[in-house]
Image 1 (cartoon, helix red, strand yellow):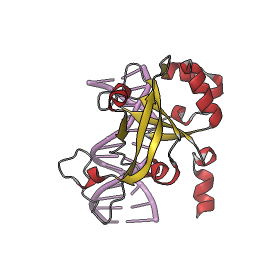
Image 2: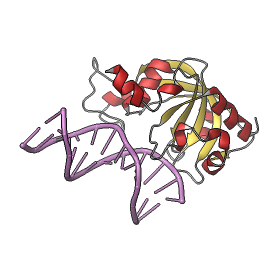
Image 3: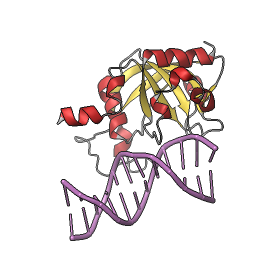
Image 4: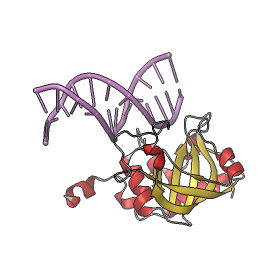
Length: 168
DNA sequence: GCCAACGTTGGC
DNA sequence: GCCAACGTTGGC
């Protein structure tokens, strides 16, 4: 089973990872708001692979590049880190929350989230167009056609290339 | 606003 | 367990 699916898993060769991209729509939650709040529980992730990354792989101290999607322009808005590993995402249990999941129960809640903090301003915003133009980033999972995962692992070299583009 | 990609749902 | 329909993501 794991042999078959493992070979087809497009992210397998990125794991284990210590560097991540986390996407957010700035209209909903921006990097600037993270700077103001200092840290934020990353709730509302309702995709199983992204959930698995948070639950199984993301540890305190891991570096996180915050990516603004559905933005003009889209791109890397800032740097942060994981400051708390995954705990249950109780927004799934709250009927008034936009992240409510009617299938989640108190003792059977599949959803969790990490806390992201220590936001750090980058000298330069790194646009998606710049990322596409960078040869060393041609394998970046973010650039895969139709890539919709909101959390993506980065290779060390990819993280370093992105930081270099940011001027840090 | 359009639309391609693709995860999820639900009928069978 | 297949697969068509549906909903969401996210760049443009």
